[in-house]
Image (cartoon, rainbow, N blue to C red; front, side, top):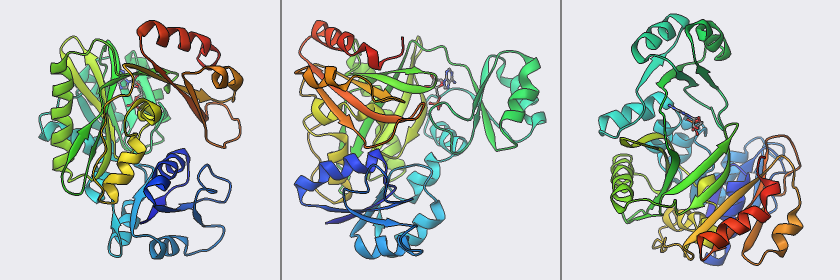
Length: 363
Ligand code: AMP
C-alpha cells in the first residue's frame, strides 16, 4: 500500500523504516526537504507545491499523522477522499486537554482533578476549588512540559495566567506520584487489540530521558487495570492504530495524565525490545494487516533519549546490547536527536549498560 503521513519528523521516519519490509511505500507532507523522514519516501512539501496536501492525498491509499496537533478541519477534508487513521474523534479529543479529561470522566477513568480556565478570575476560582500546589496547563499544543506553570502559592496566580497568553487552559490538582508510567496499545480495523507492557518513564525538565520496559514490580492487576482503561478509550473513540496513555502510579492506584493518538517516545524501546515494534504495529493496523505480537524479546529493556547534543555515540556502538537510532537532525538545545535502546537479560546487565551510557543522561 501507499501510506501518506502528515508530518515528516522522527516518528514518520521510524514508521517508514518499519513499513518497508511489509512492502509499503511512503509519502510525507512536511515543511521542507530537510526533515528526518524526507529522504525515506515521496516528499510533498509546501516549498515544492502549494497543493502539497492534495498531492499526498492523490498518492496515498491510507493516511496517518505524527502529531495530535494536526489540523482537524484538514483531516476531515482529507477523509472525504481517503481513509485517515486514527480517525477524527481520536484526533479531536486528544488535542485538547479539556476534552480529553471530559472523556476520562465520562468513562470513569481516574485522572487528576481539574478545572477549565479561560481568565484570571477563572484561575482564582479554580485554585479555591483544587487548592495548591496545582499545575496550570495550556489546553492545546503543549508538549515536553511546555505551556505549564506549577503554582505553589496564591501570589503566583497573576504570573501563571500571564504565562498562558490568554490561551484556554486547565488547572490540574498536583498528583504526588511514585512513578510515571505509560501504556501503549494498538487496535486494528477489525477491532483486534494488543497491548505492550507498562513502562516507567523518567523525565528531566519536562523531557523524557529514560524509559524502563517493562516497568519493574508491576502487579498483574495493575497491568490489567491499565489495559481496561485503554480498551475503554480505544473502543469509545473507535481508534485505529497506536494509542498511548501516560499514567501516574500513586498510593491509591493509577491516575491517567494524558493520551496521544500515535506512536510515542516511551515506545521506542519496542524496536529491538518487542517481537513487533510500536511503529510496525501502527502501520499494520492502519493498512488492515493482522497485528503483531507485542511480547518483549528481553525481560529488561531501556531507552535513553539523545537530547541536544549527539554525544559519545561510539560508546553505544561498541556495546553489544545497545542499538543506536539517530534521526538526521542537527544539534540544538533540548531537541530529540535520537535514542539508544538497550536489551538485557537481567536487572544487573541493564543497570551496567545504562551506567556505561550515563553521559547521555542528565547528571
Ligand atoms: P504533561 O505534559 O501533562 O505530560 O506534564 C509534563 C510533566 O509534568 C509530567 O510528566 C509530570 O512529571 C508533571 N505533571 C503533569 N501533571 C501533573 C500533575 N497533575 N501532578 C504532578 N505532576 C504533574
